[in-house]
Length: 545
Ligand code: BGC
Image (cartoon, rainbow, N blue to C red; front, side, top):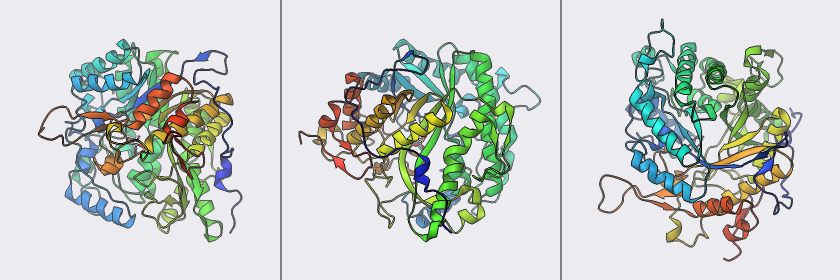
């Protein structure tokens, strides 16, 4: 059966780049005020801090049965993973290390910094449910004062903090993933709240949101409630690769998705009530540019359309227009409007990395029809034509960023903050190679060209926060060299050094980003650092070599 419309047509635009040499990142918004572009980096607590064993991921990465399960799934999906505990990560829980990293970031000229608060550090124990969820005795004031020092440091350096309340991890009392080899609930799971599928998690999260908003309201204007709620569904409840580690768990996934919308809405209301009208409250939403894998008489196209609806569109429709679609199907037959979900977003936080080829999958597409289909995570290992890839096998599509920005602007008319964009590469420091083999700098330049393309058409892009400042711990990939996203690369095994600060060195990505920030436009960066064509089909090297 042929489907109605190619999925890519849902995102207007083509891959031609107009002349943007004269366009500036600082721009006038729809109200006519000048937007001082936020230039920054993006990080998350569990990936950089180290020394925290109290969350769902630390259970997940230390259980031999879970590892066995994840390894089996990785073999089927042809991805090479390495599920391990982050250990000391990159040591940023140490304030000196944080300060040194901040100095690196400042040397690029940034004026914004996204960090996340680790809920499991701030609330170590379950709460007595008969008491209000934000009762002070449930919070670790040491952790609060530690984060306060970090946030104050940013403010004192004229850097705007962008604070995420939940970046993927949950305290172990909220979720202890089951260690049963078949994924059947065990006592650990039952004794926890069971994660996002339980409405009690929503209540706990909004209490935590209220408490931290109250603590930090004097310093923070930009709040992000939840990072990538739909990735939690895809990886955690359908693919089984993230906690809680369920596979094709339709019912659990549907409940978790509903509760994630509720959690965002309730946290939004809590933060708004505490911080007043000036604060900007958003979420960081992952969007993959959808392409359908060619073949099979429209079935992949159909799968891609449904995938796009479920993962790219549904969540934003819910928290902006209050649309609740219990069936989660794109025909929208059962849609209702929940008034208290409406208007709960001040800006769209966009995490954009890549395009993907979606196809109908024998198990997921049947067991979870609303998920549409799946895509191969590592295109390098897949038998499929593709454009330029990062070292994880993700396809770069810079033009997709413009097309998504345009869609978001036309659909929601809200400002957009790019909360993540980055390139995984087994990169050497810039000092050790001539830069011509590194694709990180061209990737950054190419995406910034697309941001300017959007701004030149009047789209209000508030800023660009690059993922990430330093190489960090990358979920299922641990510290694998192919999963390095840092502007600064971290030497994890410095000769003769067993403990202490791990040395950082800038990559060409840091040079390119710093150069564009200081230039305020893009004109010379393209020839100096190279770029990638908007379609992602070719790398254009720097003109000097
Ligand atoms: C997540 C980050 C992650 C990055 C690269 C995003 O999905 O928010 O935590 O490290 O992508 O995979």
